[in-house]
Length: 219
Image (cartoon, rainbow, N blue to C red; front, top):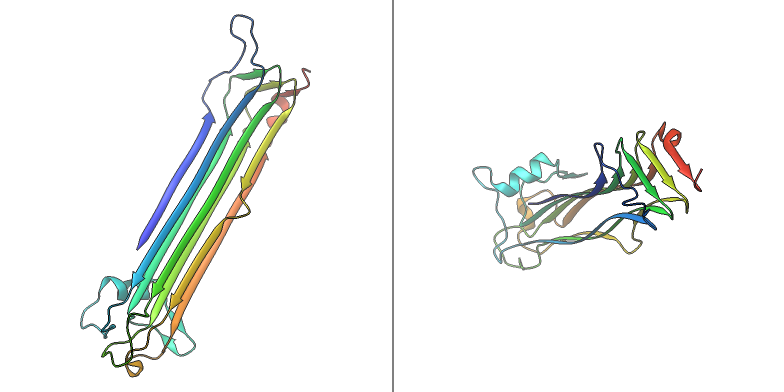
């Protein structure tokens, strides 16, 4: 089982301020957080395949806890089982009670690029094997990319305020389950099962009330 939980965060918080120093106002301010992920998970069967174990194993527990089943019934054991969970958070937050001042543009950039590839491969289990060649894959993705201006503090940007959250278009979330052969009489299915749940949240937000402290164009 693979579990990846990561947070990439850039923030201006508490009472921090970004403003003129010795009369020199920043020409522009850019606050960014960027995540690039490449996660690969593989489960490969043995040549002999899998038999129904007398006691629970890590793979049978994974099948049970994730409710592995088909129209033919539940899958109690398999030759290759992969469980991949990916939960990244990429965010830029300006939530200070202080001031952020620039003579140019204030820009918030939150960007994520994700490649998650998971595979349960039962093809090593061939004809004549005493065990099954069933492959089962579970993939769970909860990915959030956020750029946020909170409802406190004072922001002044003569060149405007840009709030950007981007999940790159070439992101891939891939799950494969490929069965082998083996002894199909030992289980209710002869093949493979893949359950893939992907949830993404991309938002650029000006929180309720934040507009009261934002000045654009030097106003």
